[in-house]
Length: 166
Image 1 (tube, one colour):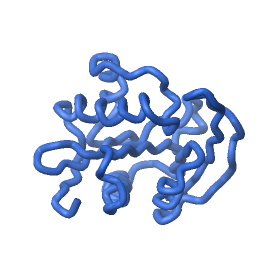
Image 2 (tube, helix red, strand yellow):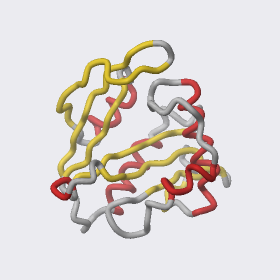
Image 3 (cartoon, one colour):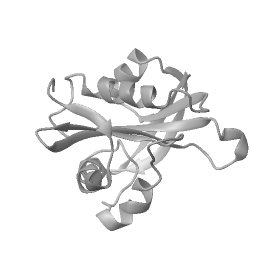
Image 4 (tube, helix red, strand yellow):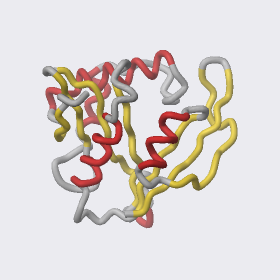
């Protein structure tokens, strides 16, 4: 992954980002979406991201192929949550374990410098030791676990919430 470049997402990246995400939708409990998204249905989600402001999406690209992404999204619509964002990160299968997640998050956090963000939140479906290691290494701390809040693949799953203050 040493040759991967990390950059702001562009509209041309949507199909690859959607493909990466849909793999997790179809095969894991990591996301609680249960039905794959079409590119057109995913477009409004993608269009939330901008080059400036609280909501960013970074992609990692290697040899012209998007192999991962990380972003920030609104946490909740209420005004008091305005300075809190939820993070998201997904890597193409086979791209894990080479430091790419850390590079994506570090670039994302650097791009947010100067924005009015106080708290980053990450919800992690358990078990997911790799994601927990990544988030803890980058300064996220466990704030609590919601037991059996999601049902997918024939069972209930816990979600741990991690927070990092900026």
